[in-house]
Picture 1 (cartoon, one colour):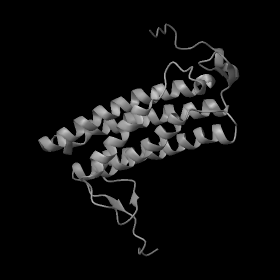
Picture 2: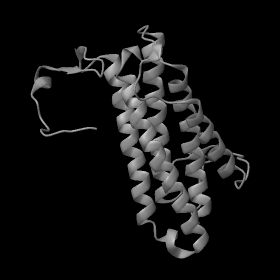
Picture 3: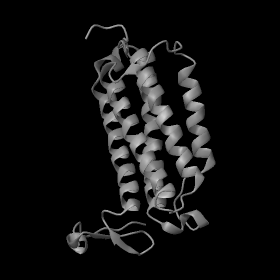
Picture 4: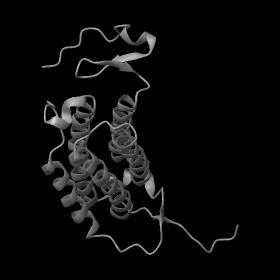
Length: 204
């Protein structure tokens, strides 16, 4: 049970914060940066879900409404998982199996199933995709780039700062960015918006 009676505590006024383990660290620490990026990622996925409610194409046919409903449900689950991931990253002891909330292999496998399901309806790519393709597609591409940034911070936490992270957490971020890329493409296709492709032959 979470009970929050007061939003501000003034504890962080000096630039420090407390990890889930109870340790006090700088707000500029690599670990705080890593779970902060995951928090931003969660917020951008909230924007993808918002765009699903605002795109008039969603209600233009039952098939599009069904696509949007399933996508929204999956994104809602991902938001819950990202909260778990942020909690895991805020516990230095999580790698030893002590985390109360953590990403599991099944979460990664569920993403892979959704990637395969969405991708089988798409034409193979013959060019790079530029961010765009309708409001939902554009928001999904934004979320993808934030996901890659979160992944880079998590990898740096391990490789540059020698702070261990469970392999499931890193794999989840890697797979999630793949999923969001496919969502960007699928949203354009399913909701009737043209994908924006890179044209290497364009005039400068």
